[in-house]
Length: 560
Image (spheres, one colour):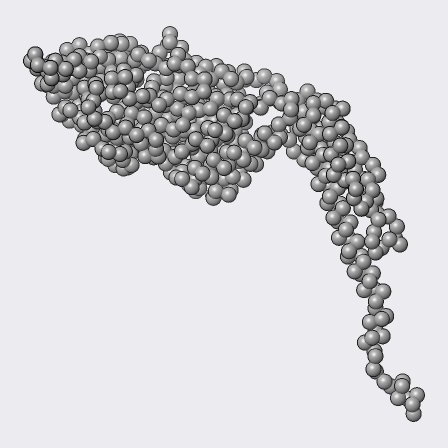
């Protein structure tokens, strides 16, 4: 009876089963712990060798020094661990314009729980490639009002990320130079290395003073005539059209006010080139320039006084008709830059042409600080930073950038100046010649949209003043409407990209927060390859795009 009860009893079955399963449980837990440890060691080996080959490729000048850097890093980072490094090997291939460092490391790992299986042998390999070419990089950045404070702050962070990535990949013996080109509709060239010899200082270039002369005088300039004075202009214009001041200039009284007025009138009869108007109005030229006339607008022809149209005309945004404003406007349809009292009567065209108001004005509204400016330097951005191997100047230029309302966006003009920065000829001469072996040139173009001639659409000027003057003057290949100007500038943008690529300049394009299919297609065509085009839909994507470009340009990378 007792035996039957014992055989039939189920008490303690769980304990028996648990005891029987303990070896399997310990084996499973041990395998998991050891597996995790093996993975951790493998990861540590791989990370260490990745860094070692990058440092060897970047921070040493000779093959012997590279091998020493590689071995020293691994010794410092893998010593004193719960595994034993058994072999370290490095192979270095140093060509004329490239360097390849291949590293290999092996280690024995003693397991904690599965030690009865013996010692596990692990290995890791990596290869780093670095181009040793000298690099020149022009970074051309949209600083227009549509960027806004959030966009411009993101652009600054992104630009710093690009510079950091390039600097991080630079070898000690590698010559890398970066230049910066902020643009709106015009660019500012009055920065580091500026030379007044680039500038048309006295009105010899065709369009210098164009807004202040009438059609007959414009035709005379087209025919090559260059006047220093506008003879009899005051006597012929009773309302003050052109340079004169109307009846006030004819006052022959001997009192001080009449004499002072006649002196102002005589000054107003001088040819109104832009530097003269800056001088007479007591304002200072900030440094922006107009686009050169065709065919020099998109060529690398250096400025030459013997050919005045190759010189750059100082940017001078005229006082627009109407009561003087206290601050600049930002209207798509109306005048935005009335910074002086008109002083004369007549039509809008006549009042804009009159130069008497620029002669010792008693009052003016001038503010160049932005983002909404008023005065002769309206919407003029911060200066170009030419190519330099010392990146501190570029970083300062990035920090100084702002967004500038008004005038519009002229991507083609920014692109033209990026091209000039990469050219060895004046105005900037820091670049190496094109086609030199061991030299690579890059241009990074970033914009948040399209070519826009903004403002005053309903006025006779058809736009704000910009690098191609007012749209009504037809200097964008005859276009006088904003849509026609955009189409022509888009064509010029693509044409310039094509010319630069023919000179073996590698182009990256970044479009920020723009979805128009035609605009995106234009920048895809402009880029040197599909992988060189980036669409950034938010600020994080913008920063990632610039960091990616910086890494591609530096040509230092893991290739395992």
